[in-house]
Image 1 (cartoon, rainbow, N blue to C red):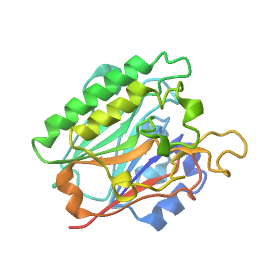
Image 2: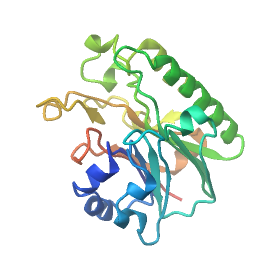
Image 3: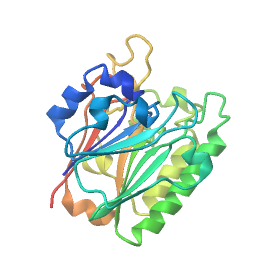
Amino acid sequence: MKLISWNVNGIRSVYNKGFLEWFARESPDITCLQETKADYFQFPLELRELQDHTVTHSSAEKKGYSGVATISREKILDTKKFEKPSYDSEGRVLIHEYKDFFLLNCYFPNGQRDHARVPFKLEFCHDILSKLSELRKIKSVIITGDFNTAHREIDLANPKSNKNTTGFLLPERAWVDTLIEAGFVDIFRHLHPDRTGAYTWWSNMPGVRARNIGWRIDYFFISPDLLPRVKAAEILPAVTGSDHCPIVLELGP
């Protein structure tokens, strides 16, 4: 089973940059998209009518903002939003139940340059961890998406100059520690503990992506009982179309 997560920075924009051709080549079983920036009826018709796939979404009330969507060939047993208005009104979370696991597709809030939304982001993080702990009592759990946080210095190109930048603030990073202490596994870093230059987001400033001055802020975290099934976890930096690139998790039987 191949799972892919990608902050597409606008589903209509990435669609016009070859999304469907890329999707056909990769042939994922489950695709989690973040920052779709569209109501469902603004999604390209070809995406809404993909054969043998279910498309679910949570769109923000504010036009052209946030939003998550999941394209699944694998059978979904149930889908819920977070069921907290402050998150659902921004299209932050989809919670899917599959036969063997729960899957959370999440777009974590950005703390903003002036840190105005850092408290909201940390509240979201706390609530997500509570939800993960609750679901894990029932079956295995996978959480993926744009976490908007680089965990350690190895996860961004310029850690020293970003210590006061949201996305690398100590309280944000400490929450990732808490997630790991709760037993969840950052599967990319688990498999590639020393890999440097492994980033998933780059600023749109000229030359930044070409020089790989990036951040790793998109993740797959899994409950440890899934570790024996993991075949691969990779980042696809050559895939363009967004300021983020896709990440991949492959599971065996």
